[in-house]
Length: 281
Length: 313
Image (spheres, rainbow over the protein chains, first blue to last red):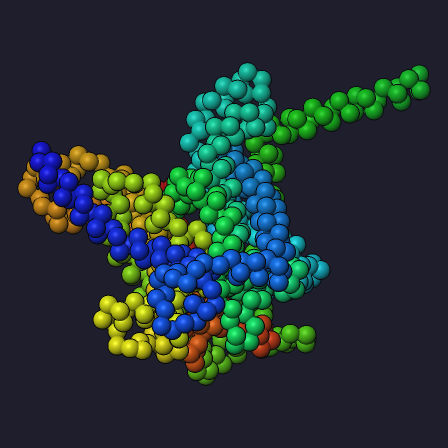
């Protein structure tokens, strides 16, 4: 029953109040991109305005990063580790979630609780002993150590997320198929999984993001330049002694985020729903 | 006859085996454990077992490349003689308290704003969520540069707006400023999780309740206090519990931004544990430090199981 003009005023006020939050969220990215495009002369000129590029943009930091450092190798390692760990975790998580959400068997509730508790264990609690386990497995200083260890936090996450999705598929649909002669496995692959595709996409996206962003395991289990991931490479190899190459450093931070930003732009709604599902289901 | 039966038997056995496998796969009591087995095996080998190892390390004088001996709880006790550890213990609570508190208050405000009628709704939500999806180690590098002692854009802006006296604080070189900087970056990264989750909770509150409250003469503040807050309580509890555990055990931000410095004033359990356990090689002590995370983890798990799972089942 409000008058339209009052409604419009309120709407404008809301946007004005949102502005500081948006500046807070986006400014670091703006500044990172800006720094990576500035010439060194302007970057280290204390009289210049840090919020703008006045003396011309340059791609020299990017070319230096791509040709003079092993950045391309680090990115390839990140892609390999992330793709394999995501695929592996998705398969293990899907079948475990289906069993925990649908089947009745010995101690099913106990397994469910165990998965949930594991989901809450922070990676920083176990990295020391895991380094030892990695060493015993003969994977010390190898990117394969990451393929093996990342599922420890991805599988609980995927399982937990997918259990929620599988529960929303009506049991009757599956039972109908089984009355018509389908086996359980067929009911899973032909009925339940197609319905749960949004959940699978969501789990895959989050698993990809979580492993791309993982830092402490990658930093602890790998150290050679040909084994490390993009995050570790940029934060450790580009910083030598006390001289920082801020332009290349920011270029590395920008390029290292590109795969996630691409996924993010295409699948924003999945990120929003997965974020709340992870906490609420 | 003997030859004939020898030829027949394997075919029968094979057909029997195939139907038996098919039947087994159809039986929940077999299929269930089979489907859960890979996940359980993985967790047993790479989570439960390392956890036991951490317990053993913490109770021993383990050092990189040397045989270790059982020494009881000496590590846990000896840590209290270390200034670095006592400082870290205090930091962990200051950091977690300040960061989670700020994220809760700001996240609530942001969620309330996002729940209003907006132009470019998708675009705004996308922008708000962005800090949460970008690799933390890399975005923290951006903050590191923003807090640089010579070229800090934070100081430049503050001085230009007349909020700071030139030359402005050396953010990462002074004790309290360094802690504020670390908290600020954690809030920046964690705020989207709070805002988006609380927003989901807000949207699920039935509109009729607000209309009824308005009909009874409740103003916006009263409606927030008596309708929104009580109904959001479960969501808020979950978000705070989740965030507490992951803020308390944070590693990336402190490692990239300050390395725990200046003089241990921003060390958290995870960063100190890495420094002592890996960089100095005293694995036993390092493991004992990370196990100080355990009581908080145990509390959060208990609270989650008690409040959250009750609703799920």
